Length: 155
Ligand SMILES: [Fe+2]
Image (cartoon, rainbow, N blue to C red):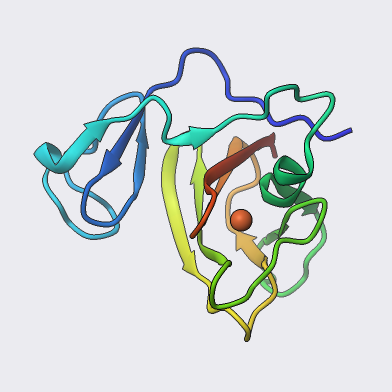
């Protein structure tokens, strides 16, 4: 069973320019678009939560990221930890009118990457190669119709 937990009383500050979400406190400077702190607005509903994590609806199953952590990659000899990300236990559509716009990745609530996805050409999936081997990984996806959803997992 998939369970998406949003730990504690996390607060979300959203960049008005690019939609980047900072956790707990607004960023001094947006790591994606460079907007200043005053561009960030507190939005408690910035990230959707499942109504009942033990009994997900079809909409929730299509949007909550699935993470598959592989400890033996081999692509980078000095150390590489693969995380394969798929959007949705039920695979999310990737059509012009309904698609995953981007996937943001954080480690211990600190931003590490944004990946933009193109509809029609890509599946709603991503493989990343981490240089670090521990911490709490947080993956956030943004659907053009249904908003932001997250999944957290310890490495
Ligand atoms: Fe969607």
